Amino acid sequence: MGKAAYKVEGGKMIKVDLTHRHGKIEKIRIMGDFFLHPEELIEELEETLIGSYLEEERLGKSIKAFFQKKRATLLGAASEDFAKCIIMAGG
Amino acid sequence: MIEEWRLLDTPAAHAYSNMALDEAIAIARSRNLVPNTIRFFRWKPSAVSIGYFQSMEDEVDIAACRSKGVDYVRRITGGGAVYHDYDGELTYSIIVNEGHRLVPRNIQKSYEILCSALVCGLGLLDVPAEFKPINDIVAGGKKISGNAQTRRMAVVHQHGTILRKVDPTLMFSLLKVPSEKIRDKLIQSAKERVTSINGYLGRELGFEDMKRAFREGFEKTFEIRLVDEVVTDYETRQASELRGKYASHEWNFKR
Image 1 (cartoon, chains in turn green, yellow):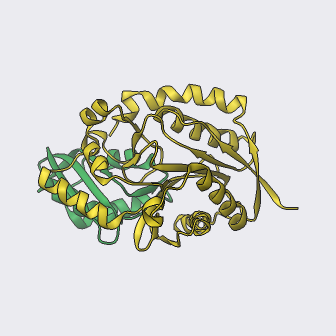
Image 2: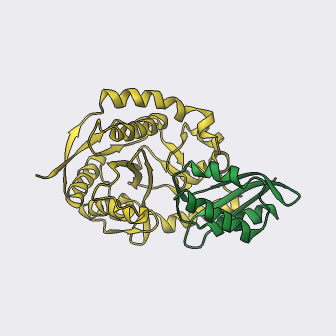
Image 3: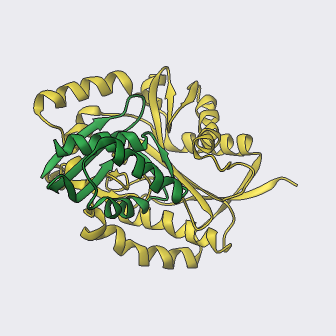
């Protein structure tokens, strides 16, 4: 299992636990001291990401699209920061 | 006529009961059974709370907490790990309906507005302070209060801590750190970046003085009158049902 922690400049800490296979996400937990409203979306996002390719730009875009669709508010981090930390955990 | 809110000054309680009562008040508010509410409370025994998205195992030294008799609990709000010392901090909650004049849809803005009451209260205690985005209040450039908000069931629920005195060495003995060397660095950095009311004033201030000042801060800033009340039977029942969730391994270790 891969683990990574990434502190967003001027923002919060993101931590990711990840297992992947053939370049795709198998299992993922996104943790940290950021704020996401509504909170339960984090579990939904993690589920959505299963099967996604470990490609930073694509991940960033699909996370952003997910939050937009759900009308979520993320404070202390951005979708791209999540993507960056996921790639770090997969590396 | 001036808007009336309810003030609850609840007895110091276990972490699970404290978090259960907060959620119970929000539920009662969402069903319009109670008015907008300010609550003051403390933690007995002292406790560590972690943010909704944090991992309990990654953030909290469970063995150290057990040996020191310190509780640990996951909050429904995001944000970071907080050590709630029984004697070292006052916790508050604000429970207000969404759409109220004080809470814009923009969450970042609403932190600033809600925190401005605490800034006012600190000023009344001769601790000049200011809001620092995202969710902190600082005095003399050092953090003195951390705050966290959630919005559910058309209710805005913000809670936060106001430091009365602070002991970074104790705090970091309860939190997980990558290594002993880094622990020392974190303690040193907390000493430089965190302050407290007593630390700032250089004298001891009692909890009753703090509550008086923050009460006035809320009343003045929010243009409301706070009416002393007690928890309703409905809230007590809800809280005792929710206590099981907050005491459960499933909830506390779910991430």
